[in-house]
Image (cartoon, rainbow, N blue to C red; front, top):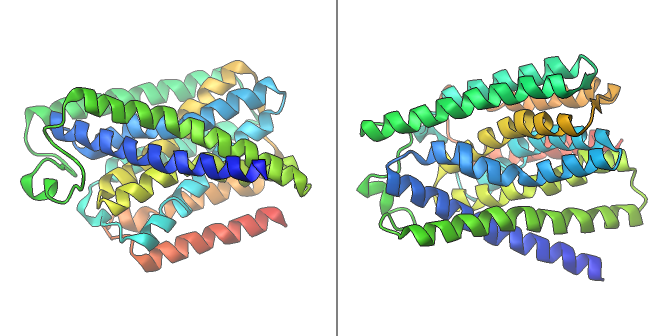
Length: 322
């Protein structure tokens, strides 16, 4: 009974922390005049990827590196199919209003690079240097874009216009910095804490039913560590912040591939299981390509698309389980 209560507590913390992080991130964009998309690609993405980093380091320390890699791959697949699918069912994601093409193509390039390194057969510190170097370039470019946006009043997915501010329930462009910092701190602390509670209890429940640990990594832990992204994206969708929702997913996937495995590879080598090379990596790539019409052709993610994305993830889970 206690393990179920712990799981419920973790879920509640995730939802509240996700809401706090969205409020803090968008308020920063309102105060600084920076597009919410850029904030979500950095602060929000890093915060919601924290559980994956903690689990990756812990798994390698426990001599289970395959769990770390499976978690990242499964998490990226869940981020697109589940994290965008469920919010779209709840509220249409108006992604047509956001220009995320540059970020998306950077994410795709990161995915291809990650897959190329995976086919070497093992992630070592050399792989880590390559991944972290690419991440550093991406962060530098995001900072440069933010500075350029502040110098010119024209930007993509800006949320600082009066018309947009009227739609931001509970958000205040004049919010004091201490309040914004409280939102961010609560979000960044609450998300990994909630995920940790939920994942730990979920693993215990899975072992009660004798589910193999390899399956746990790709499914239960991947879903559990994607719950911060899901919580944040649901809140962003309900607040009509499609830029935060889509930017969170794209940024989180980049952080997972480049930062999580990049840092974890310094803790210890991470061998790549054949099953990941033959199936799961390609599913991750296919899921990433599904975002193409929404990003390149600026289509909204409607409820119908939300159902299709969620259904595709269910099919993937069934394939892994069988």
